[in-house]
Image (cartoon, rainbow, N blue to C red):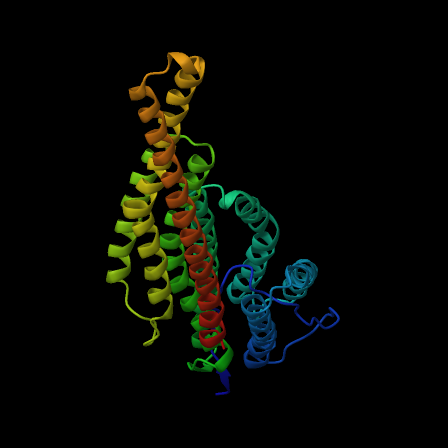
Length: 348
């Protein structure tokens, strides 16, 4: 009995690389072990290059390079599929070969049709939390489809081996371990990203209302931000660290605590500015409409007090606004650095 490594395919969607395909040729197999080994070697090449692509995607910011590799893979996946398709069945048994063909066919579909849909979602994902959630869910569903296909290949390989008395070595190689680890890291990160993004997006709505001096909009979005950040902080508490690494948890908590404080303590001061501005403008219009000789002392005092309140509100507004801008920039910079460091540390 020849020993052949068990095929184990772990997939992270769109993390693929070029497959080195030999010239397609007619080939005869003298025994079942050589037949299986031929397919297994193709899988090893795919896994090795898939891992190269994962590392590039996790550590590189050059999207043009990643996209180029995806387009190359569309072509080479089609070639690989034709190559396996042209293999003969073995003594009338074709289930193992056909399962690999189905897997490659699904891979091609994922790289073209499903990938295009996900790219479309990615382009609009930043518009709202619901769209971002849909985008990440679409990628998760794509992974699940590929996982099911890889399990089918694995099962058919076992059946083939059992039928022809081939000893399979059921061990997880380094590449398979790395692929699995990368999937776990990304899945873990996505939990925090959704929590982060919900409050991040809600603050953007609040800032927009502030820019438009929309007092009702400010209050509505302030209350929603307070609710979202508070709920997010409770969710974070329930999430565990990743192999002892609490960096994502810490950074996400800091950002959400900022949003909570912004909504509960700081925004009311900014709102007060708009209210005092509106009050001052009304008093000013009425005051300026009267001749100086017709103005009473009470009206003058009221006008001067309004000016004083408005100027104080301007000073408070500018101070709080500068404080929030600086804190926001620092915390978002820390979040981005933390995410990059987390990926660099845990994706081999």
